[in-house]
Image 1 (cartoon, helix red, strand yellow):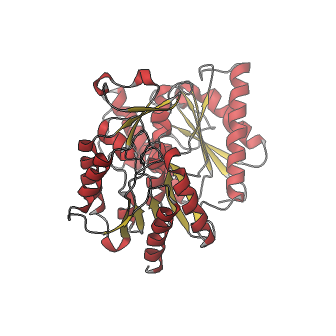
Image 2: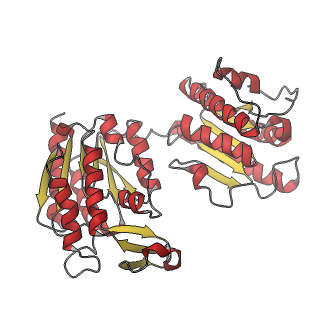
Image 3: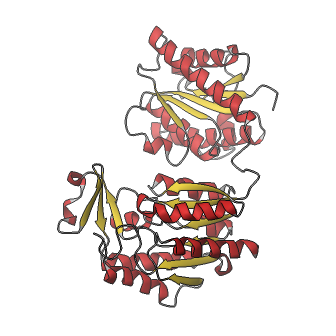
Length: 408
């Protein structure tokens, strides 16, 4: 890569050329960055010297693969794959240090999916979009992709759009420059991934303190669905030497239908990466919903706790807990038994699942514990006669992880 970082400006040059050229020229005008323009349009391509990578060049990355151009969706899917491969190559070659897309729903769909799949967390990525003022979770996913609402349609130019696109150009230029000045996510200390929820915070805080005293860098992920997805992705990208997965509550939301699921592949990345992991049952006593009015009617009659105005918790049943135990066994048996430990708190899985607490249900907890104790689990189990938030439990979990790391 040259001394100046290069930003890739991406969009449909057949309909957005003026706006995209303006972003490119604004980035270059800073004097600190270079910029290239990549065309991902689908109509007649414009004849412009401002385009550095043509759509035909992008699509050439598909090789001889068949492209379905009979429908708009087919064409967009093909362009998404082609752009993903193009950006992956440019990043691998260290030819780009940041990306910015601009456009409507189709362009946003193509760009953001390619950004997510081709570019790691930490790589500067910005999307200026007409879709950015609504629910953007399906565009952002588990990544650090930045969305900027264009306010006006990205069509032609006007003073309002010029201001917004200028801000976007300045933002990606600043991110690209700074990204070269900073160290990457891997510090000089080995990093440990840890999962946390509000109701397992005391446990995690104690674990963090002990791990940092031992010389580790700790990255905490809030187990809110996106947090678990981000952690799994970063494990796969090789950022961690070990995982302290104390809070596996996202599995309950995936099973029962809560709003904080991390999808069906949660708790699989550490096994695939073959790194040590300590797993527990933090907050598996609950399923998460929004305000009370949003709880599905089929859950009427269940035990609820209003965590705050925006979060309603539902106690997992005995039957659900047994299923969660089976899920844990199935997932953990795919991992190396020498690199996996299960540490179980015998006196409750969260701050409200303890004797006298609103979610205390010894029978339901026992169903989960018994599913893990049933003999099918191949790795070692360590039981602690304490609530998960007791300091003795945090110490036991950290000790189990450190033991495996020392055996590496």
